[in-house]
Image (cartoon, rainbow, N blue to C red; front, side):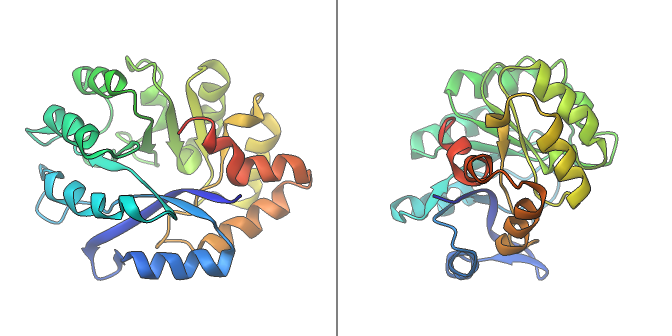
Length: 232
């Protein structure tokens, strides 16, 4: 089974949008069985609540091809309540972005998410706020997926995954070279997850990258689907 651990449904702006039918077409082309889905970014400002977006995406819970996550905005006044809302909707996990807010100073929110028992996937990037190094001392002992493998800070992401039992790493948007290094240097290979970041990358492209990066067919099958099943 192939499971994409990082995709988006919704509308952010004209170059950042995707509906369920469009995603399933990508999935069919790539022979992806299931995708983790969550809302796209804010359209109403940096402090936007995701209440409405989480309500909308919950309508996909009956689609057997989707594993539906909600999204929390650290800067929104209802961030703590939204964790409860996501849980009450029956969503299976939580996405947190970091370019606007970062990770630091939100200890209460991280503790709330941990108490929910839901896995958390976080965006990591090149900026100071979104740097994966900021995750080192957050008070969170639930399952945490490092989205985009830390991007340029992928070596730091590898170190964190190797030092934290609850940290996992997802490889969307990484170069082939960086993907090979992650596969080689992450000690517990069950912590490596396939993700595409669709609609920004086609799932087929990310699968081909992993096929080039990993010649061990059994390990490749784990990365492409078996590993994410262990934490959902």
